[in-house]
Each structure stands twice: as C-alpha cells, then as structure tokens.
Image 1 (cartoon, rainbow, N blue to C red):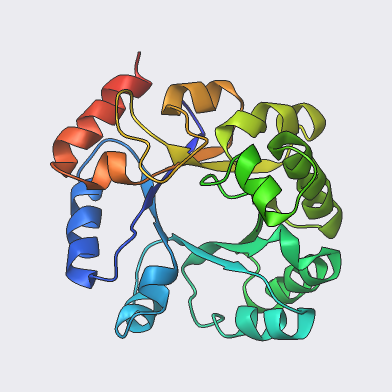
Image 2: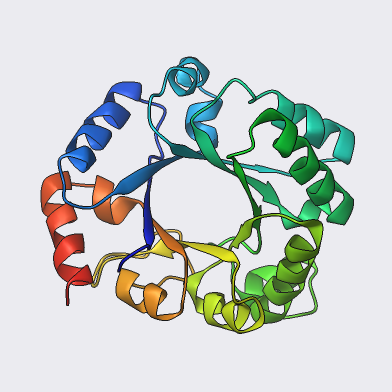
Length: 230
C-alpha cells in the first residue's frame, strides 16, 4: 500500500473527541490524515479548532454555489494553512470549478481542490428521484470529465466507479469514501467497498470513518492494519 493515502472521517463537532481520535491514530504505524466536514466547520468552536490545528487535514465542505459566492467561500478559509485538501461539488458547474481552482492558487498553493461527484449515499434509484435519467456510472464519468477540464487536482467518488475513472485518467487523484472493513455495517452508505478492494481499483486514497472511530479505536486500527497486510 505504498504511497496510498488513508483519511479518517472525524464526523463530530466534539473537539475533545476529535483530539482523542487523532491521538490514537498518531500512535499507530499507519499514516492517517483527518478529514473534517460540515458538522465541525459549522459548530461554535469548530472554526477556531481548525485555525489552530497543527497537522495537515482535509476540509470537506462540498462548496456548491454561484461562482462569486463560491469564491468568497474559498477565500474565507485562507487562514487555514494546514488545509491540504478541500472539496467542491461538480454540480456547481464548470465555471465555478475553474474559478475556485484559480483562486486557490493565490491563497494556498499547496492546497488541492477535489471535485465531488455522486455522493456514496446515493444509488440509481436515488438519482432517478432527483431527476437524473442516467445511471450512477454515467453521471460520475460525466462529472469526472468536468472536474478534469476545470483544472482541479482530483475527485471524490465511490470505489465502485474508481476503476472506470482510472482507465480514462491515469494520473488523477481519486479519493473514495464509503469504505468499510469486512463485515462492518454499511449504515447510510449505498456504494461501499473494503480498503483492499478499493486500492485494487487504483484509488489514490480512501476515507474511512465509522469502521475506525466507533468502538475501540486502537483495535479498529489494528483490524485495518491486518486487513491491508493480507
């Protein structure tokens, strides 16, 4: 698994809980980068927590708005110097994606812009309910082409579509949430995969949340380590 990135989804607004998770992750043999989302970012103390965070992190905001507002959003996080990855949603359109990527170079040259495709909680039925006439694979591939054209650094999709995208884009960052250790519950995710199977599909990195953070974290890390070493 050399050069493969592993992210842990810290889906809580409890800063003490996050510190506990990160402390146990740092004591492991795996290099795991935290991913923080809307739950923390919108919380009373979350913004300050991120401002003072000393290590690299992924900020999962899924920015999706008109270009001008999206630019204001990306500028509002320019003080978060340790933010190495930030997400924008492909549904915002090509001009929004291009504008954010261009602006990001001015505020933080080391920050990677990741375009989000179809959420891993959705399936073909969900897309039909929203109004899409195409299936998940078709929509994700279309969104991937838009993200690539915009100049963004990579994309977020489920590991189920990653193999299709990798065939088309050989040197693109592909990060995949919806990752579960064997026999773990899928919870609210529809398109899931194990870490090993995801890496077999040529992903650049995986996002793993509840399989690590629920229950005994140290034991969960060991389960992940054993799984990856098979």
